[in-house]
Length: 171
Image (cartoon, rainbow, N blue to C red; front, side, top):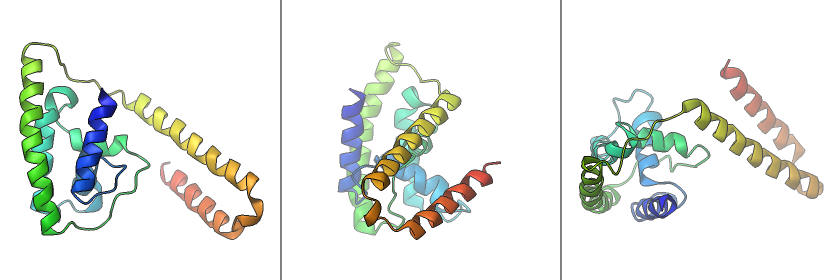
């Protein structure tokens, strides 16, 4: 059932001008917490949409649904562009009614104790992402082994150095 809701969320994101593999929640979390370094430049519509969605999913995900959704979509490519007014309008038309409906359902189910808030195990989440990274890197390694004459080794060395710098910055 969870996959169905994620697919619907991704579909809404496509209609709202985002990439097909991202959820609209993750996209909004990205814009509100990672696209604008100072957080003061975040356009008002992203802040409002985040408040609406976070409130809607608070019974199951706690207060930061969109930001957590961003962290749960770790290898996604976000559009890195500000959305034009028509796309924002489409987003609002899609998000607000669906959030009202979902909110009524979730808060009702919470009230009768059928739904309860998830507890986030941060270590487990990070380990799952590292496992995903390992699978991703193994896939790349297999491709390099299978198609050695089609690979730009100089570019690979550059990528390897970038990854190394990213890992060192964690320490």
